[in-house]
Amino acid sequence: MNLPVNGFKRALREGRSQVGIWNTIPGPVVAELLAGAGFDWILLDTEHALTDVPDIFGMLQAVAAYPVAPVVRAAVNDTVLIKRLLDHGAQTLLLPYVQSAAEAEAAVRAMRYAPRGVRGVSGMTRASRFGAIPDYVKFAEQELCLLVQVETVQALARLEEIAAVDGVDGLFIGPSDLAASMGYPGEAGHPAVVAAIEDAIRRIVACGKAAGILTLDQGFARRCVGLGTTFTAVGVDMALLRQAATGLAQVFGRG
Image 1: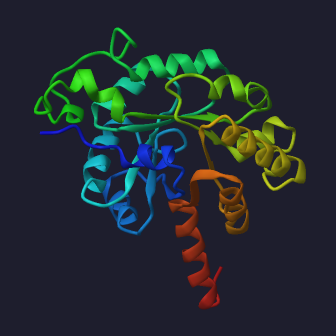
Image 2 (image 1 turned 90 degrees about the vertical axis):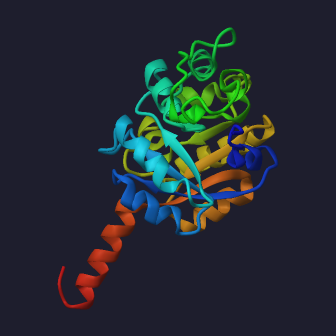
């Protein structure tokens, strides 16, 4: 059995735009539904969701049959959490609130086995197809993809240092947290925040790394793609559900 190819990582390296959807509702049912919706990638969130590490196992199984790339967001940049998610078979991780090159370097080490890192070794994991992939430990790193979130004024000031870390494949801008950090909580569309986001995208692209973002503003999403984002999330399951439900209620004079 061969090591699964990470098509998402290859797409980012080739500069091909990947459009994604955010999955915050835990469990395999919604994950599988979204996996079949036609997006290039799906974010399985364990930071701002009820979804926890054990849930990810079944959710990865549920989306595996579809031509969509699962990206798992850990709750925090933590060696143990990273190890567990990788062992479950996640090949691409998104880590929140990375503030410095040192924190990015720690994440890279957590993604890699010794001697290049500190990821703990286990032979019987879903990642290695329960030991069926020969020499998984030697070659796993080739198909792993690390995305880090830059979402504060401090992180943006160190953007080039973070991007320069070997093993960081992409930088993701978090508009809501950035807006709060800039003194505009709840105002991700504030002109100053938008300007900072657009500047950050240009800087990430200039560094030769993949740039990413989540925005529900379709016009701004297209603007970001035009500026160079190659992994762009354009919807969140809970927001879509609320929008559809309230819209239907209003059609019948409710709400």
